[in-house]
Image 1 (cartoon, helix red, strand yellow):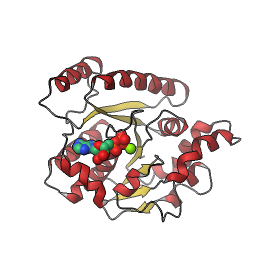
Image 2: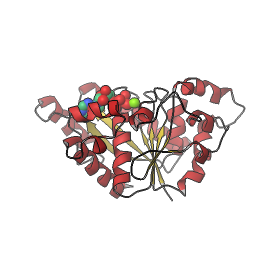
Image 3: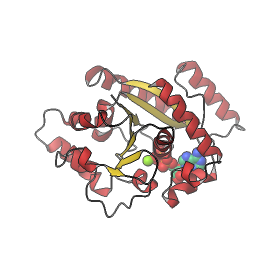
Image 4: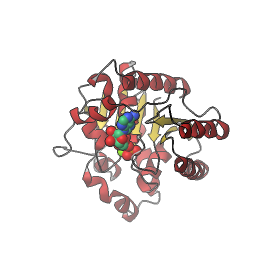
Length: 255
Ligand code: ADP
Ligand code: MG
C-alpha cells in the first residue's frame, strides 16, 4: 500500500510547495511511482510541474466534492514516474462547501476519496495551503505521515509547537495512524548564528525528527518553477537537486 504524506505548515513562504514538488519529483527519479496532489488554491505545485492552471478539466475540488473519483482527476506529467492531481482558484471556496455539505464527517472527504489511489502509487505527496483549515484537516486525516518544512527563524519555533499540537489533536480524534515523518529545514544558510541556534533547539526538542539533510538557499530552486520544472530537470547538478534527492532518499527510509 502506498503512503500518503502531507507537506504542512500554517505559515506561508516556508518552502512547502518547493519541497513537495521537488521531493515528489525526486521520488519519481528514484523509481517510486509518485502522485503529487496540489491542495492550495494558489496552484503553485500545479504550475511547478508544467501544468497550465487555466486549462484544467478537473481539479482536486471535484474530487473532494464527490463529483469525480480521485483516479479520474490524475494527470500524467512529463517527468519520470510523476503524476499530478491539480488545483486552481476554484478550490478557494471548498472549505466552506465541505462544511455546507450534509456529510457528517467533512474532514474525511479526502481520506475516503483517496483509498483507490493507495493501491496505485508508492507515494502520494500533498502540498497543503498555508492555514490549518478544513483543507489541511482533510489532508492530515488522510495521511500516514506529515513533513514540516520550515525556515530557520525564531518565530518558526513558536509556529512549530502550535502545529505539533494540531497534529496530536488530529491523531487523537480523526486519524490515529498519523505520524510526523520529519522536519525539513529550508532556505538554509549555514553562516548565520541564528540558524545554528534554531537547529540546536530543534534537535533538543524534536530529537530524531529533523531530516539529516537541510535545503540550502539557492537560485536554481527559485527559478525552476518559472520554467515549470522540478529542479532536477532544470539543473541536475545543482545543489538543490542533490539535496532534494538526498531528502527523498531519507524519507523513503522513514516511511
Ligand atoms: P510555501 O509553499 O510554504 O508558501 P514556497 O515553496 O512557495 O513556500 O516558497 C516561497 C518562496 O521561496 C518561493 O518564491 C520559492 O521559490 C522560494 N524558495 C523556496 N525554497 C527556496 C530555496 N531553498 N532557495 C531559494 N528560494 C527558495
Ligand atoms: Mg505553497
